[in-house]
Length: 371
Ligand SMILES: C[S@@+](CC[C@H](N)C(=O)[O-])C[C@H]1O[C@@H](n2cnc3c(N)ncnc32)[C@H](O)[C@@H]1O
Image 1 (cartoon, rainbow, N blue to C red):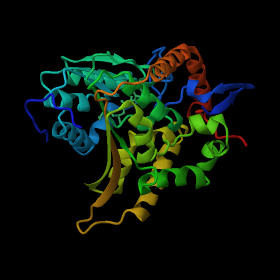
Image 2 (cartoon, protein in one colour; image 1 turned 180 degrees about the horizontal axis):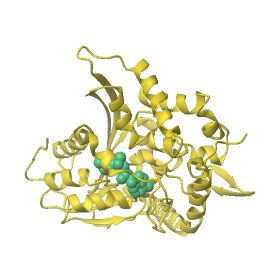
Image 3 (spheres, helix red, strand yellow; image 1 turned 45 degrees about the vertical axis):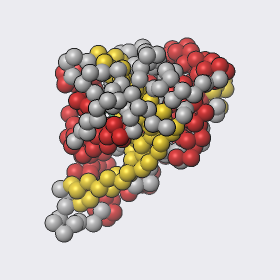
Image 4 (cartoon, rainbow, N blue to C red; image 1 turned 120 degrees about the vertical axis):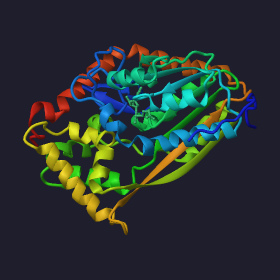
């Protein structure tokens, strides 16, 4: 059953891991795949110094990256979510998604949150009237009066074993009638992303920097550069339907026509490729070499089109969970609150994990794995 509070419709263009010898639930680690940030926030895994999200690079393909935002908003309109009063843009980035939300829902009280200082700075400039906070999704507790939690291209940065759990907690915290709407790239098996892993793990010049992530254990499960695969739609449905009246899922494969292979590199440089680059030395041209080899792989995988351009196929998954009027059993609400408390309690520990990750970044140390 769709929500129907709207009057007008507008369209817009517990796993275990070991630290030392102590076994701790992985759910308590800093387990988002982090772009390092210059933030000194004490809140989470975000608090790492070094390279950062680059709003400038991310904004290079604004139109193409904006399409799923519009598609998700249009779905909401078409399904009765046209006048939410309070909206939070989870992982608002440089504020593009927030801007689209402001345009689509002009009377709503909209706020944004993100873990990157650089991204937030940009978001504030772009959306002067909007309230933005720096926080980590895993610890973020939205205002209970929120009607719509919106998230574009964010949850794939969470490690797989935590992703659905985080969504469950957020959905569980929504008031009756509230909606959780998200889109994530689902491109683990896309040629663009397979090629990144191939160059990192198989090319003799780069494999020494990455081979430790091929071993089992905490280092690879938490600190490996590749983003984890997106779970099946069935899993999302089954894990969320106990909290919701209705759960909608779909995939869209966008076909972006770009000028050439170098554009594919530019596209992913600010997102999925970045954690690979951050593990390489900053000096000596190693990062540039990595990009060149990566581009050569892309040239083999993406044939030129009739006009000399290339087509980047970009599969994305959409999920909209309607809380509806469903009563959530008290034990589930308690479980969700306990999860949040656990994350918040673990901030100090997460900082320790962050600095462990920092020590792994050979780019800082200037040498590959000596093995
Ligand atoms: C690809 S950008 C998307 C930005 C924006 N939503 C958009 O559609 O343009 C991903 C954003 O997610 C943020 N992010 C990743 N993991 C996060 C976390 N655990 N908590 C908060 N923000 C996170 C990053 O800082 C980044 O700004």
